Image 1 (spheres, rainbow, N blue to C red):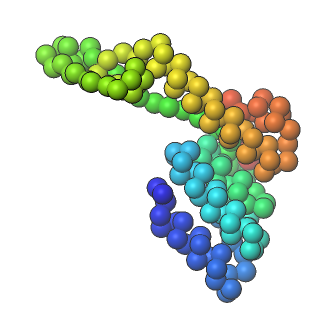
Image 2 (image 1 turned 180 degrees about the vertical axis):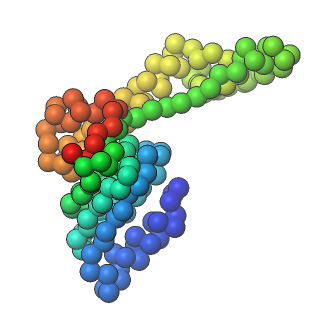
Length: 169
């Protein structure tokens, strides 16, 4: 996992009889969906044994928000920034720069989508479509997770899940 130390500490908290409850303080703009999902699951495992409260500090957005909603209760100040329910995939493409400085690259692949995206050439329409499908699939999963944890209809969350941040209000 990307959060091995936190995963270990959360397991210890779940198993330690001296720990009567868990307060998760979130102050994060997010991170990877993988890391957020892993921490979400670990916090929910603690919640099977003891109460969990999440407190959003200055920022609890994207995967930070995902982690916060793992708590049984979520608290935020009016000026906390939260939400940003969305998924992104970023890449860079350097083919023009490489051409300018006289560098070329060759890629041998086992299938047409194996090297998509590739920073050494523009993305193909097929590669772009595949990545868009992956982003949409992950976004739908995130929306469903928020709907379940916040006890809201998926349609309501879908309208709110356009990537924007919200105040704690």
